[in-house]
Amino acid sequence: MADDKKKQEDKQKKHAHGEGPVTDAKAHAEAKKAGGGGGKKKGARDQKGPKTIQAAEGKAASRGEHPARLGIAYKEQIIPALMKDFGYKNPMQVPKVEKVVVNMGLGEAITNNKLIEQAEEQMMAITGQKAVVTRSRKSIANFKLRENQPIGVMATLRKDRMYEFLDRLLNTALPRVRDFKGVSVKSFDGRGNYTLGIKEQIIFPEINYDRIEKIKGMNITIVTTARSDEEGRALLRYFGMPFRTA
Image: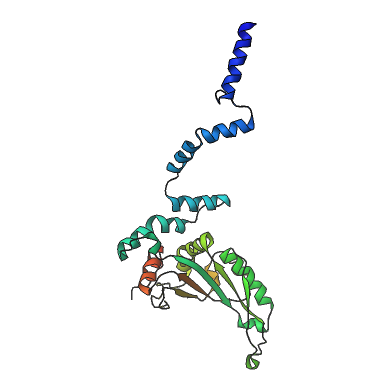
């Protein structure tokens, strides 16, 4: 009995000094704070790896998605290549694609409102994002156009959705253009932004040819942070933009 009592007293003393299993929540928190909390955090940081790539994967994973392929390629391959080509000292100086604007004008919608609904559905299928209806800013009597009348749809894509759209455009849609020989290298605006005209929306495999009422074209503007057309051209070429050589 005396030995059991002594063992119990020794056990209580150990708990009081933070030794042995801690059952009290407050004592556990204090022991964690005073003990190995800092070391564990430091170890986790050492195993994190490259910040930019890990951040992209974590964000996509939080939405239950895979990181965009072109987004990963930009961080792992394109940034180092452009730094070498243009002599950038810091990765933050490297130009990037900021957003992609897809615009579909519908002049016929003045007399047929149903075209707007169809265009919204098609834009949603192509971009994976709900389109915004564009409206006229003023009335033009000669064209029977009233102010604030729907005249088209547009979608502005950023981040993963932007990269996924560019991937489909460059690797799936453009090769489906009849007699395709590449895109013009002269469609930059002087500030590194590029606008591409598409004559038929059916080059995108998401569009069901049997369900469309009218063939429609669209403009795709790729907005970059490049300071010149030369930098913007190099950026898009690394992404796989098929510029014509002549």
